[in-house]
Amino acid sequence: MLSVNNINVFYRKIQALWAVSFDVMQREIVVMLGSNGAGKSTTLNTLAGLLHPSSGSIRFLCQEIQEMPSFKIVSLSISLVPEGGAFFSKMTVNENLELGAYGRKDRGKNIESLKWIYEIFPVLKLKGKKLASTLSGGERQMLAIARGLMRRPKLLMLDEPSYGLAPLMVSQTFKTVKQLRDLGTTILVVEQNSKHALAVGDRGYLLENGKIVLGDTCENLRQNEYVRKCYLGL
Amino acid sequence: MEGKHSPVNKLFFICFAWLVAATLPFYSPAYVLLSITSILMYVTLTVSWTIFCGPTGYISLATATFFGIGIYCAALLGSSLPAPAVVLCGGLAGLAFGVLVGLICLRLSGFYFAVFTFGLSELVRHSVLWWEHNVSGTVGRWVTGTSITQAFYSLLVIASLSILAAYLIRRSIYGMALKAIGESEEAAEHAGINVVVYRIAFFAISSFFMGMAGAAMAAKFTYIDPNSAFNPLISFTPVLMSLFGGIERDYGPILGAFILTFISEVLLSRFPYFYTLIYGIIFVVVILFMPRGLAGLLGSGHQHKFMDH
Image (cartoon, rainbow over all chains, first blue to last red):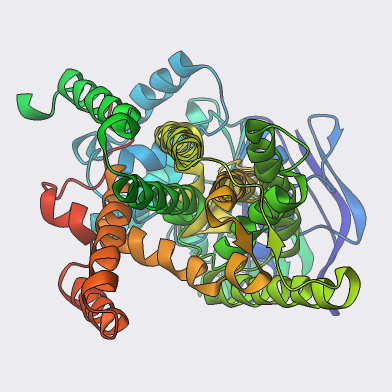
């Protein structure tokens, strides 16, 4: 579905990603693990079109997207939920959700998506008319994910969904991620919380200093000596 | 909403106000007409300023530039074209320059945007001044005057159009997109909003109305020079009026423009020496005690009006 081929990404003169390649198949959860500054967010931002690789290619459903501007990539049904949610705090919850489906002409479909989202996140229905800034941390994360889902994306990219959440909320969030995959969404998730991520993911990649050092099924990664020592602390 | 503010009543009120305004020249003395005309000019400038700057929160201080461009359009074309065509040309010139400015300041936001637009409007003023002195060899220009009634009617039409445009934009999906851009351009881009195109387009639309207002007002000024046409005060007043009235409501900027123009006309005739002092005090009081403007005092505190279903 998505295939990234040897991309190099620079922040001006500093190289952040070195020949990164990986694939995401339909209906799977791919997790990307790595410590701070490994290049996880850079990878997602490049996929979302906020950064452009200096070389290499990104193919999404048989289309090259590495040069496309962000708003066009969004229209191809790729949604990014940035780190910390990045929602519009001065707007209501419903307005935020509406912006998630921005540009889609079919209003009937929007209402359908909204119903679907209320089913997954009932709390958002209750707080629909409240300002987004009044939500709690966990609710904000839900809102951010829900916003990403409004467009019914083929690929949902989550940047550190556990960021700043209480342990209970973290499990809740990952449960939702799994639920979404079962409903047919393909998910690419970037995480520092390796334990949870490896528990729900199908396949995983290890990113270190801008390079992919390991790629395998999550099952195998959990058994891997190096991963156990450095990422799971076992 | 309670019955007092039902849509039918609102519509009735708007029609009534418009009818009163439209028949004004038949029974009001000339000086009243003159002050109403300048009120309408400030209404246009404030409302069109709010179209872009209200939802995004980017403070543009280039209103004088677009207004002045409209005025100079009228000075150059006034004798050869009929009045409505002159006004339209002023608007189009404003629109074109708005696109240009929009393109130049794409990456700017926050106070960089404010400082840049202010610098730009001063640059334009001095450039025109230089051009008039050294190339055309004049200090000012005469504008083919029209009757005050005609100036009044053109401003009434322009003000109504700008209010209608502001109302429609605010209630459309574009209004929400502009608000999203103001909060975070990056997040707006993530939401699939073409930030570049929207920024330029709506900045240019507000410039369009400012240009038209300038072209229509020129006929009233009869004599213009760069310093009066590109007067920096024109850049600041819409900001003050809009804040005074309250930018969260549709009627805020209209109310602000109405009341502040009225107050300043009264002050100017009663206390010519303390005029700016009193005006300044009023404004300080407003900012300190009514941060959401007059509309904030009048309204029920329900701020999120435009996307309720």
